[in-house]
Amino acid sequence: MGLHYTQLPENVLNIIRRGAVIPAHPLALDENRNFDRKRQRALTRYYMDAGVGGLAVGVHTTQFAIRDNDLYEPVLKAAIEDSRAWTDRPLAMIAGVAGQTEQARNEAKIARELGYHAVLISMGALKGQTSAELIQHCKTIAEEIPVIGFYMQTSVGGIILDEDFWCEFAQIDNAIAIKVAPFHRYRTLDVLRGIVKAKAENKITLYTGNDDHIVADLTLPFTLARGDEAVTLRFKGGLLGHWSVWTKRAVELLERIHAETADHKPVSQSLLALDAKVTDCNAAFFDVANNFHGCIAGCHEVLRRQGLLEGIWCLDPEEGLSKGQAEEISRVYQAHPDLNDDEFVAANRERWLA
Image 1 (tube, one colour):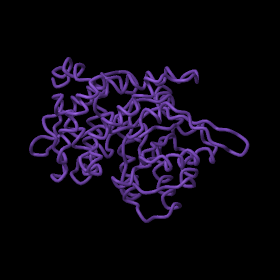
Image 2: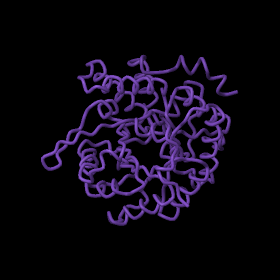
Image 3: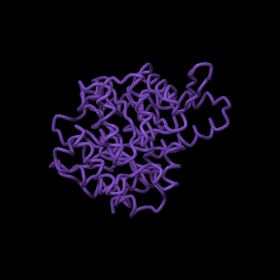
Image 4: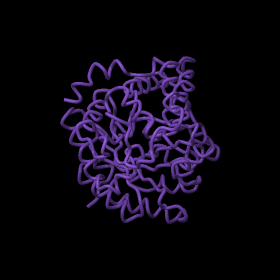
């Protein structure tokens, strides 16, 4: 028997609908590239105390290779056990599912049995399949647990999905949200047009994954036509690898955005100016100069500098910082000191590592 979104705890569904900071949880490894349970727990505690609305685990930032190293279930189990042991406040727990339909469905079952509330569907493994086949894949997973669509950028394995695909996805009964992350303005609009076409603007909650325009996505209204009707959509939260670092500041940023956009009045110029600053930081963390090669290692490097991770090791030895990336991270640290949460981490790190 699957889990339908109407069966979710009301406070959890409210978190998703209102919009929250949901960081993509990194994977802590030791120098032998084995799972570092202590530092994984410390990361989860950091996110809890930073005030996040939930966690996304088993996603790209967690490293898809956990599936080839028998770590998928242990990592998901660790996050949900550690979060529940650290706080009793409600959290939206999202698990990533990937691979062909049978694998993805089995991962959805694991997530549901562990207590996760929804899954984020990565479809990179389905390249070459028709739109109808992709929709059937999503419907099959939705029989197990509420689903969140994922428009992943092509640079890290995503596939191009048009307006009609997103229209059909939005009509899946157990679909509750879409993470829009093509890093592409036109393709972002394809998702929004699909939702409007499906008349699903009150059913599907929009989460940005567009790390190149985080603040803009969350701040600006998107008004689209449906016949003679003007339909306005807004991104409500972010499900982001970028928000796995400097997370306390991300929570404060989203709270500010929600406050300034609540009554539909013009937002401040100082808020809009943050879009370029946050994007500049993301370019360093995500290694844009090298086509995102060091995007996971870049986040690890920030967490290493803060003392939360011991090193930047990834499961794939070929994954690491690109030439010049460490210098870029140092540059944005100096250029945007107001965006880091180093003091918060320093004040709590030993407690999280205990």
